Length: 510
Image 1 (cartoon, rainbow, N blue to C red):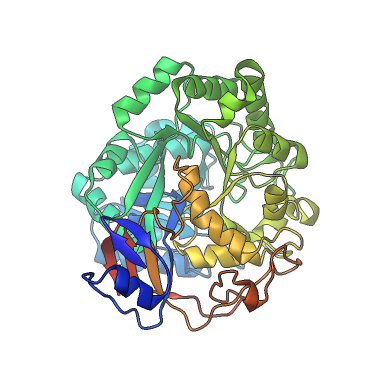
Image 2 (cartoon, rainbow, N blue to C red):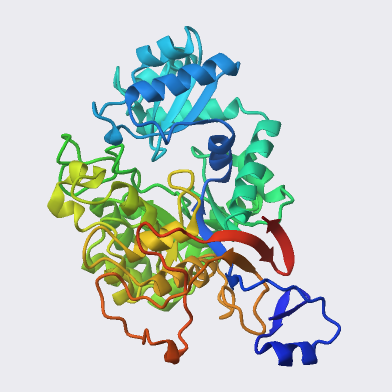
């Protein structure tokens, strides 16, 4: 492969390449595997960095272990405690830490904010509740339980406001360095008023780093002028990402048609069809990419009805031309998929969710019951319906590891929902560039004219594999010359990144 000026200019046999480019610097990769670099279509950069540099609770296998990690961190680090990643569904007693337990572990008067792994609820100390006095009167506050909904938003806003610019900068650089180290050259930041705040997204976009950032802001608008003004004010690329139509299944806030199996609630609706339609109409008229966070079937009802209304007014092609997107789209049915396909709505999915919480004994089954849980994340049905897929991590919710996400998509826990490793790889490369508005036909590939954005991997073997439960439409015979990928069967060692290059510039070297 020959690269010049940040672009791929030639690909072919070694002898011919050397003859065509006799003065080139030659880099011998020693038989390593070279592939288009990854893009992650759903990341919370500062949050990820805070987890990488602070109190990471994702490995806690019990409530006692979670409290022990908090106790150790509080003894070593002064000031408020920010932690991320506890998941009570993995613990024997299946309950979250209480404020009294946090007070005892961290010490009296200490402000403690421990956000659940899905980032839609948090366990907080008494001192932090006292610092946000209105929280006890907001929806989502229940004594003795994690804060959810509006109560969580109020506490989170206060916690993030206390972070200084240096704290945020250190966290961001750690997160983007980690992305480059796993072959990622671009991320889509999903920011918003109650996620990271306006200062954070402005600072992120001003940061000089080799990993490219496309930023979305999750705030609903009602007119084209309002959409244009908000984009101009913040410098963001779209009003999409985590614009919440609902919450999460783990926190019982995803909006469902029928109640949860393990709690008498149908979740939380943050937007109705009227608000969705107003936002899509405003963004379509303004030429701005719109999008929503929607997980539950009732939330997806509101989102698809809103898209259908605007398409009836402005025309389907006008809506499709903007490349609007929906994050997660987990409990989606055939009628909703048809709306996505008809109006070019991109599904930005997270296979890591199924790997973490799917299966007959997982959190999904506990929250919804086995029958409804088996409908979640139907990647094969999405692809068959003609819906464009983009694959992301929602880091720090799941790990920033594209190969792990591809493996999860190809080995879905529910039979019939798998897609092939090749299709998943395309969704994590070309699909993610497309979800970010790049429709040049070459981004995410390594052909002449494509940006020289690639990663070099230590991978011992390459195979052409079908989805784990399907007969593939292309040949797996080596003579067909279908490009191979590293083996991604469960338990196989995943490739190790040796080098990451974006537009011809090295941004990581092992």
